[in-house]
Amino acid sequence: MTGTSSLYQHVVIVGGGAGGLELATRLGRKYGRKGLKVTLVDRETTHVWKPLLHEVATGRLDSSIDELSYRAQARQAGFQFQIGSLEGLDRGQRCIRLAPLLNSAGEELVPARTLYYDYLVLAIGSQTNDFGVPGVKQHCCFLDDRNQADNFHNQLLNTCLKLSAQSSDSTLRISIVGGGATGVELSAELYNSAQELVSYGVSNIEPSSMKLTLIEASPQILGALPTRISAAVRTELRKLGVDVREKTQVVEVREGEIVTSEGEVIPADLMVWAAGVKAPELLQTLDGLECNNRNQLVVGADLRTTRDERIFAIGDCAACVRRDEAGGLVPPRAQAAHQMASHLYTHFSRILNGDDIPAYEYRDYGSLVSLSKYSTVGNLMGNLTRGSVMVEGHLARLVYVSLYRMHQIALYGYVKTALVTLVSRINKVIRPRMKLH
Image (tube, rainbow, N blue to C red; front, top):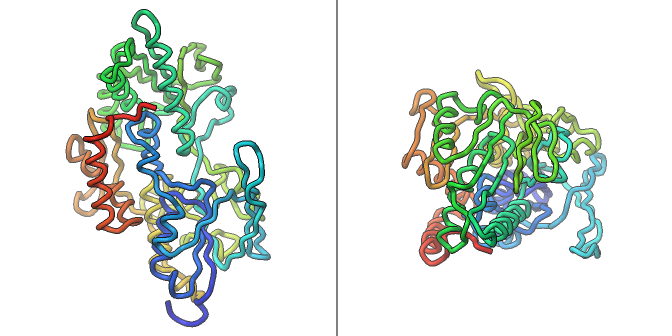
């Protein structure tokens, strides 16, 4: 940090996802003891990497073990943490308002608060887009956060327990709307969960009797990936027994059934909606900040919002134009949030001194899709591969796991990440292969 003008300023980061938490951690470690105050705000007390929520939902990952405490991370990394939900913004006063914190009974634990900032970074992520389809909010499960994933896991176990009490083999009917990475990975994990439940004594629930339907409105699942990868994943899913329905639009969801535009009624014991994302509607109300039709905050090449140079947006909630030949907007992926956080961190001394920073350039390193223990498929991109290269099997699985390890390294450092990895391997030996409660 150079110059006295950069000392004793306050940076508030709203959202403890992949981008926000990494930025708070790195800023706290570098500047926290040099006079810069860094505060992270999130409505939850713990962090779970969002790309792993489908594993939490199926019980392969125990969120109570793999979660990260914001308060513990703040203490170790030199930033401050406040639990709360963003309620409003006053750009003139440079402050944000946090809603009162209530307990499950509706009693107020912490009153509404105001936080003043010198620089504000909004990293509040995205949520599933129901596209206004009737019945979705009432009857479908979502996987936007840890609580929703835990809720689906409980519903899955309860449904399986109910079916296991029946006198004969029963059919577990699950429908997933949305053929993106979440829907595809959840489909494969559910078959693995069915096998595990049988091995732990839950009778009448066989993977062969599971009827799982994956519904996608566009011409192919994994529409953002090359056709050959989509085709390979479709083949693997159908080998498992997944009924992959492409070019199928859902027009209504009722209790226990999904209705398509062709009038077909698909019965289901459990229904998951994972079709598309949008930023929270709250962003449309933040003191005139510019948003697009998906509620994302429009930012310039330096990640500053277009109407306030002291407010930045990163991750899924930012509408940032790509500067490569692909064009369009930077996709809502964890790797983009990581890159944006790294870009701001790298140039934050210049931000504090009021200087311009270089333009952010998104680098697409490819995408990988994990089909549980059955396979991993995807494409890698970069200078070494000279374009897009399809990978699968053990190599693809190794790269897929390394993405999570990179996130952990950004938060813990190399030594602690190595220890966390070791503990994870030990838990695979001494703990059940899936969460059973």
